[in-house]
Image (cartoon, rainbow, N blue to C red; front, side, top):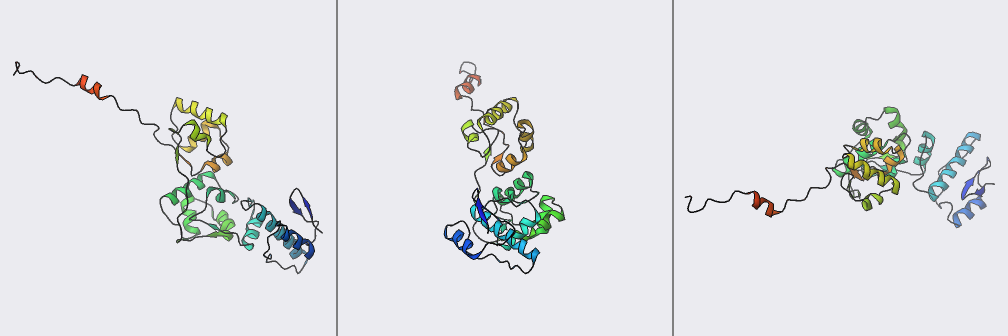
Length: 241
């Protein structure tokens, strides 16, 4: 039968027996709902094993990445869905082939209150290839009603304090110090400019998607009113009139 190793179930080429499944369900390591798979031959048998393994992993980690077409299709069979109009950056990161620039664009659309209605519209907005869209399609849903998505407040990378920047996911202290130094040389013109100057990897940019914007930075303080009074020409005296 299967055995537990490092908290994950590893199959030795055959199906979990009923007793093992009940024990895992009782201890919370396996969801109680049955996996919709019936093994009728060797290939179906192997697929059923993979399906139950994925069910276990998703139960332990709902944010588990889906690295390929097979994992997306299995996730769809297990009821996994991604609402295009409400998905978070972390949910989008699960999809194979996803780019941080696309995540940023999708979250911008959410902030604007825009709703996408089908895969064709999604592909048009992102410039995604039809092949990649077909790979994602099994778990995509396009809901236009319901509660609006909860989006984090945007932080101006050109004006935020070091404390605010340290609160962002993925940025460590050294990277924040580098960001502040680079900002003194000149404000960041775009998130691509930020990535280039700080040499941030794509996974980190994906984690930051939807959290940053490149504003104009802090507004300079107003000059004291006294300065304006000093520079203002004095009114003519009565003798001059």
